[in-house]
Image 1 (cartoon, rainbow, N blue to C red):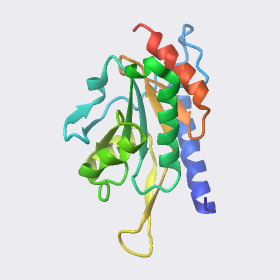
Image 2 (image 1 turned 30 degrees about the vertical axis):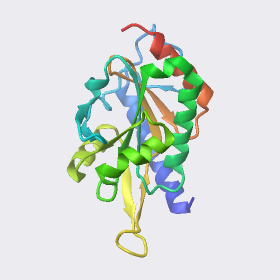
Image 3 (image 1 turned 120 degrees about the horizontal axis):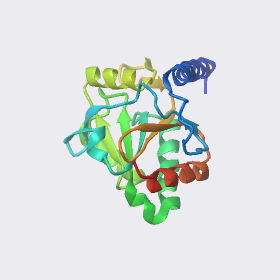
Length: 204
């Protein structure tokens, strides 16, 4: 990981931390006791409208009744994205029968190269039940702003060989579609499994 990329990630985490501090309602005394960062009541990460890899328009409300785990990345990512998707597949294995109550979504931040017809084959390598989400450049810009995700192209030796630096973290939503957790890259899978089980068993 280059120094510039480390600085980029640090900046993204600082900005997100500020958003979490000012954007979350911390007055609920009956909150669940999560291991990962509780962002219940945040005034961001509220909704999206994108196209899944089956070419269906979907929004967060379409997954009501399931715990939703959402991650931003891109198919040419050499490390963070495949690592995160592999860990999320491990999470599904840990959940066992409860996995049927969870939907993992992968949102591309590189819609120009990540063609919708290829997203399905990419995410299904990690788990056949994962869904890839695609949007136009403008749609992805709208969604990333809503989710406080920072990303930027880093030029390569050719026009198509660029990479994309992006903030790496995962959002978790409860069964009613409310954002509840922010999970930093590299978080322990077992602790996330425990948090997800809390959300699966909760009534809203």
